[in-house]
Amino acid sequence: MGERHFSLVLHDIAPETWDDYRDFVADVDALGARYGRRVDMTWLVVPDFHGRGECRASARLRQALDARVMLGDELALHGYFHRDDAPSPRTLRDFYMRRFYTWEGEFYTLDRAEAGALLDRGMAQFEACGWPHEGFVAPAWLMSTGTREALAERPFRYTSDPQRLYRLPDFTPLEAPSIVWSARSAWRRGMSRVVSTLQQRRAERAALVRLALHPVDMRHRLSRDYWLKLVEALLASGRQPITKRDWLDRQAAAPTTPSFGSRNTA
Image (tube, rainbow, N blue to C red; front, side, top):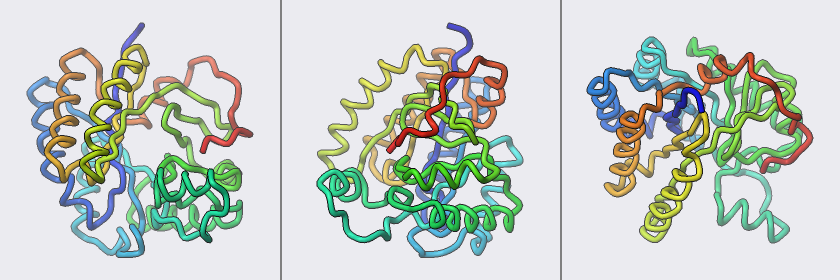
């Protein structure tokens, strides 16, 4: 099967969520040292999480992320506000996607101009902090057609959905399944424990498996311990940790598959 990798992806990075992750990241660093292999991470940064404070205004977060970049970690743009400000849903499908699946599908309904304006603001914040912005991940992985059109016009290298990475600008898909929890309530955590085990089994043969962590996962022992044990199990199995950016670099010479650029991945 060739060399296999995993990406540890930390979602919703913002001034108010750094404390959720801080001890977990230290534990992962210690695990990597134990196995003789640093665990490079991809941090999905929200420029102004729920409108409660810009990343560029937080000296503490900037110092922490600057240090991680120096160690080899990757930062990617993750929406702008990470909240859905669009008018109330009008169809049953939209109600499910925007009120049950998530309340934070910021890029799910945007047209090309609206999406482009938020992408430009996000890139400007990254540039103000001196951070590269090679990747963009929409909150909850929900993207409208207008979002995909705006992405194709801007200097991002990739985006993603739950099952694939997409090279930009042509949205060339590469298999990279995710394991993800929904930890907002006790019943969701119980269900996630079952579902994540199935996700892990289905992804065993994948060249890249993504671990999609969220701040709320860090607030509950069940989900936090699951992620730490999974990282250790993957290291023990021989899977190599890698950022999404670096994995795409390794795949640059691989044959391409048909474009999904015209397909709604939401």
